[in-house]
Image (cartoon, rainbow, N blue to C red; front, side, top):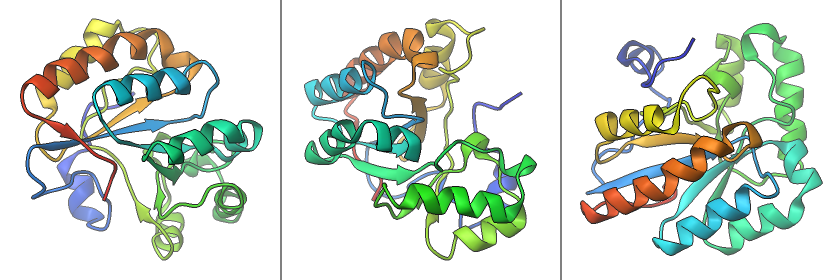
Length: 203
């Protein structure tokens, strides 16, 4: 179960969480989780380049370790990287010690100021420890491209309905999401660029 938007209550309880970027004009912020993935991340980068769009990639340490050429391309093309842990643990089901060790392992291969918790889940002790080093980023809009029960059209309708200036949008450059991502990403960039949006990496 997941919601297409981070609840306002969560944002009030944890004011240090970054869910939107206010006051930057007609700008939205595409983010991609769980990569880099051969055959997927390259296509994402190619599409972003077509629209002169920049993004932030929340990478898994194990993927970066296996595919360093993809993380190098992400940086070379002007995008940013964030830490998304090494092995994608669920913070609610993982001890704080184990969780922080996993994030620290990812830190050995990912140079990042941002952290996004897998599944958006953190225990209070994990949150308190990690915010000392990272800006913790959730999202404003989650279309659910990873959800195999949803169609690309379902995902795209969520983007059309909820994306506004300042939105942080979470997509996934993973094999699981690819069949939906490859349809919605160019469609979204085409429509929203025509509306006057710009797409930048998280500031």
